[in-house]
Amino acid sequence: MVFSSLTFVCVFLPVVFLLYTVLPGLRVKNILLILASLVFYAYGEPVYVLLMIGSATANYLFARLIAAGKTPRVKKAMLIAAVILNLGVLGVFKYTGFLIGSVNGLFRLSIPIPEITLPIGISFFTFQALSYVIDVYWERVAVEKNYLRVLLYISFFPQLIAGPIVKYHDIATALQDRSSSAAEIAQGLRRFLFGLAKKVLIANVMGQTADAVFSMEKGELNAAIAWLGAVSYMLQIYYDFSGYSDMAIGLGHMFGFTFKENFLYPYTANNIQDFWRRWHVSMSTWFKEYLYIPLGGNRKGKVRTSVNKIIVFLCTGLWHGANWTFVLWGAYHGFFLLLENYVPVLKKLPKAIGKIYALLVVCIGFVLFRAESISQFGTMFAKMFGGFSFTAESNALLLRQLTPWFLFILAVAVIGAGPLQKLRTALFNAQTEDGAAAEKTNVRRIAVVVSYIAAVVLLVWCVIRLSSQSYNPFIYFRF
Image (cartoon, rainbow, N blue to C red):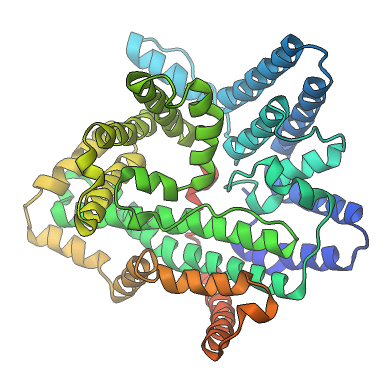
């Protein structure tokens, strides 16, 4: 386990930031961030910090060998070796049990399944390391000769265990020269606190209801309960992951780094293609740049393009977890992307109808994503569209979940996921514009002040909630 959220907010982060502020020189600051990141990752799992350091070291050396290669053949050989090593390590830790279990089920064997603990965030730091090596091979970035910078890039604690996936060229300059003004630090802290609130105050509430529904027996479910579980999980995963991304982006600003946005209001999408432009942007662009385009992208005809998209989405699903439900979830989204390509009218629907279509497809997909098995997904799907048995027992189970607190947070979650996007965008644009230009009007000044007051209130509220409850899962930690 990593630090609890309460320990991180009240102890780890203040201590690290205070030391970072008082230490002189960028080199010393970088060393502090490396040490803090290693402590952060090693807390509770000290062995696997060696795996992460080994990954950083190996990829640093591979990049140096590629840059020093005398011929294209040597460079390519080093790249292939790096890809095999990275994917091999990821495969051993993440997919060994899945593969053996699948073989056992398919051929009715009983091969022992080794108990391998999944290192937290291995998919994230592996993909970051791979992108760096590949970019050096493609000559997108100059090879980094300073090992500590590569280690900091891969291990930096704000986005280490749940993203966003950062490419080396996005922060290469900041690793060598950066500064943070008081305004940038304040803005970063505000962004962090809003992200924390999304996680603690919204995602956790939605998650408790989703867990309750998905743990119910088949006979306890009906359409209302099944839809409640589906919508709750859909909101939980968005606020959990986008909240963590907000925290990472905010912390980055506090330490002088700029990370790209990872969520662009995906639940306002007009179709599935639009959804994937908005959802987990760092992952979708990673697969586009490092898998889809190398496979040929859309340059080799419509059939090949379709095959490439299916491959990408199968890999996207498998990246999320070692279970056939994740693979089918990837194939499911790939199917709807192809459907929209072959039936263009789906991308030209009236805006309201298009949004309903996209939300319905995404919601059903997340039921598959959340289900422990294909069988459970089948049960939930059947109940969502055919569970019209409203007994006194099922009604009681439904009302038990629909507490006033849940309904209040549900309303906040729905509004925050869409209708308030323009207001939020205006506020965050205000915080990133240059000084006086950012606060020209009294209205904007008031909005900025109110946002900071709200951030402080949310911090206090979050600390109270974290102190009084044990339910606080970060569902993307396992990816």
